[in-house]
Amino acid sequence: MSEPQVAGPLAGITVLDLSRVLAGPWCSQVLGDLGADVIKVEQPGQGDDTRKWGPPFLDDGSRDAAYYLCANRNKRSVAIDMAEPAGAELIRRFAAQADVVIENFRVGGLAKYGLDYESLREVKPDLIYLSITGFGQTGPLRNNGGYDFLVQGMSGLMSVTGLPDGEPGGGPMKVGIPISDLTTGLYAAISVLAALNHRHATGEGQRIDLALLDTQVALLANQASNWMNGGMVPRRMGNQHPNTVPYQDFACSDGSVLVALGNDRQFRAFTALIGLPDLADDERFAISAGRSVNREALLAQLRPAIARWKSAELIAAMEAAGLPGGKVNEIPEVLEHPQIEARGLVHEMARSDGTPIKVLGFPAQLSASPATYRHAPPRSGEDTVAVLSERLGLGKDEIERLLAAGVIAETL
Image (cartoon, rainbow, N blue to C red; front, top):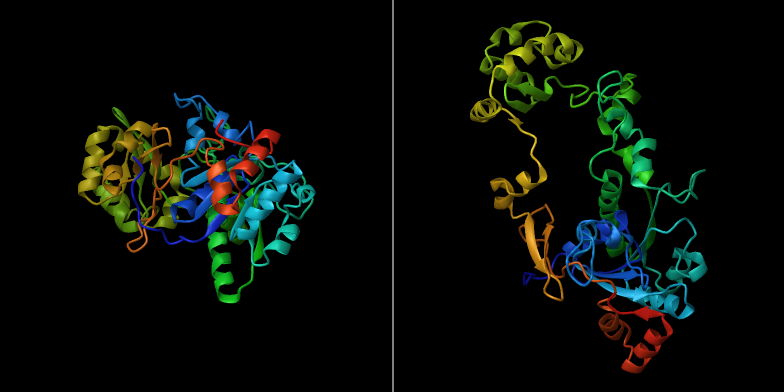
């Protein structure tokens, strides 16, 4: 059930969300979790693309896909056709009351509706206007469409993800979640919060230009630094780490374990645990840099020793010794794990028609101003009439006229 909640830290902030699919909606969901009032604008008769990205689908009248549910809680949905002049005018009126506008149209795509930054700041000078695109508002690729899978490849991420060439199954591999979209959504939320603080200090609004490619390149982190500052070209290494060894999966007699040793002390304790204490005194392996350089020689000794263990027994022994190890959980396992239960990460909510759904909550636990769970992911257009009446003061006759003209719509 939706839980009664106190106001979140962004209570009083209004977000007008013109985005769809994932990066923009992920950002607006974060802001909504933190208390902002998020008004999601959708195309009448269609709705957010991800409503159809299934199966699985909800077994109710909406037939919304589970994909859509992951990124759209704490929002109210209004269906407005911005291609209609009257629809664009309604959106401009919303923008005049909003603190933040989020859009992910192609560069210049909203100008023809008078919904671009230059137009909207005329009606709201302190507006924070976030544009998310594949490649940004500038540069030779600015007019190209951007998609998560494409950006994972173009950014270099897939060049360091997957098994090495020459091994069975070797070759570039995408990450199993839409990581470029999700991290862009997170950087977007961070940027909006920074802009809100700037506005609080100066009264000045601003435009935020955020690209999927820029975000993913920024997240190359240590791999990019290895090249920029050390001349080392990163390669695909499967589950191994480019700098730290051992930091990978190993085969036991009945399965596999993950071993993630981050320092020399842990390495010494682990080699003693598996019956190879002399390895920690071998000058090739005694320090982290040596283990990285002499990786294959070290793994040649670790693998047969680890293979004699049963996976559960080795994991238990590592846990008792305070060493980082574990198993690869499947999604059902991790969502039922006692640690996840103790952290309260899974929330059950109810849609307006009573349909129960489960969502993964906001991961940070703020002691004074926690995230809130006020609205289950809405059906497309279900809040159109209520929001137009509440926010714009439209009367019944005007709303009925707009409905009849197809400018707005109610629940699909």
